[in-house]
Length: 63
Image (cartoon, rainbow, N blue to C red; front, side):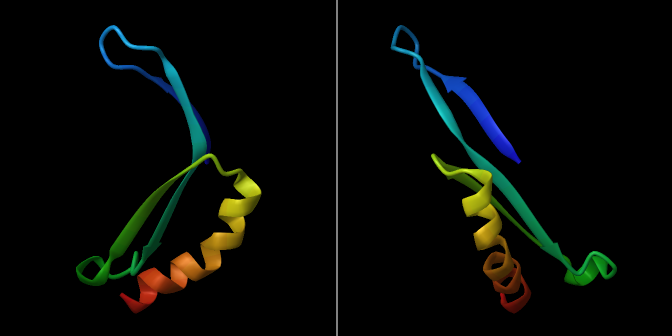
């Protein structure tokens, strides 16, 4: 899911952070074996994140 958000420290200049949020889960049919992993990739687009998704899902499976 692409995102953009604004952040600032008190009295500091505002920064806009953008990127892609990804979530992968395995074992959804087996609660005791469920594993989730989240990623917030900054300054990348959805196409890049989609390319990473297959290896990330397999990484969750193998963990």
